[in-house]
Image 1 (cartoon, rainbow, N blue to C red):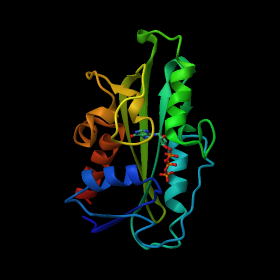
Image 2 (tube, rainbow, N blue to C red):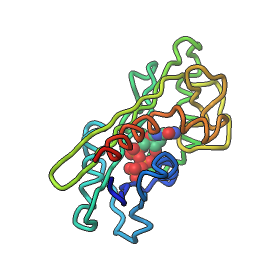
Image 3 (cartoon, rainbow, N blue to C red):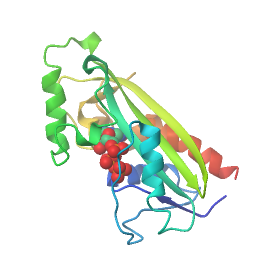
Image 4 (cartoon, rainbow, N blue to C red):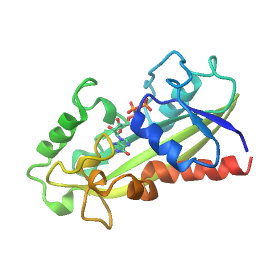
Length: 195
Ligand code: ITT
């Protein structure tokens, strides 16, 4: 079992989830905590490509296991948008409160049964030339209002299947049991334990 893992993300919400789910498996470090030069790459066309690129960009600065994660929200009524472009939807610097409102507005005439959506996450673990990927999804639907304080990103508008409240209302403890990222990190944890 490795002792350290660099999670190549600048997203503090993601980092908190990695730390929580990998507690007891290995020390999760971020580029910020190691004072590495922060680099942001997302030129791939899908989650897996982006996840690999995010990890590899740090391989000249960190000698050890690195993982990148790419994720997004796919709304069926919007033909799968924003998908891999979720972080940049409505403009890179547009806050997520606005991005959420943009989606609520685009769905204003869409009925409940057509508001299905899912979060998808892909983690790429890079160890020299070897790459392993781990995936997770969370099915649900887009609510009618912005609700809740916890989590990040689109959590205030996403209601997971089997619940009647948004991820942001349900909070970290429940989200970390059911989320797309928790499922992908769980698979990564299993892999790391057996290494
Ligand atoms: P890094 O690339 O630095 O890891 P990022 O936030 O830019 O951070 P992505 O390119 O993978 O990451 O974009 C993921 C976006 O998808 C994120 O900014 C949210 O808009 C959305 N998203 C992904 N997982 C989410 C979650 O668990 N809750 C809410 N929104 C999420």
